[in-house]
Length: 145
Image (cartoon, rainbow, N blue to C red; front, top):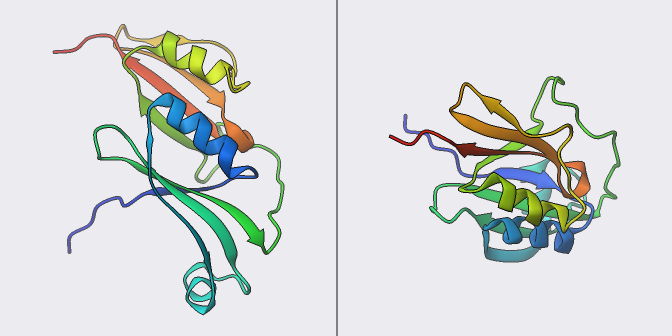
C-alpha cells in the first residue's frame, strides 16, 4: 500500500488573516473554494458542514496546508494548544533566514513563545503563535552539507 502526506488541515477564525500570514512566509495559494452539501457532511462528519477553504503550498511543492473557516456549524473557540499536549498541535517550516521570517511574523502580531534557540549548532528554531493561535515552528539549518 502506498501512502504520502496530502496536507495538514487547520481551522482558523479568519481565513484572510491566516492566508496573509502564510503567504508572507512564502507559501502560495493554489486553490480556494466554499464547500457544503451532503458530500462534505459525510466526509467531515458534521451535519450542515459549510466552510470557506484555501489550499496553500510550500515553494518546493512538497508541503500543503488546507485552511478552513467554518460558516456552519459555528466554529468552537478553545484554549490555544500548548507544546506538551497530546495530539496535533503545530506545523513546522524550514526557513532560509529565521530572523527575516520572524520579522515577517511580527508584522502579523506573531512573536516567539520564548525566544530563538540553537540545537547542537545544527538548527536555530523557535515556536510562535500564528493566526488563530496556531503553533508554528520555524527552523533554520545552520550546517548544510
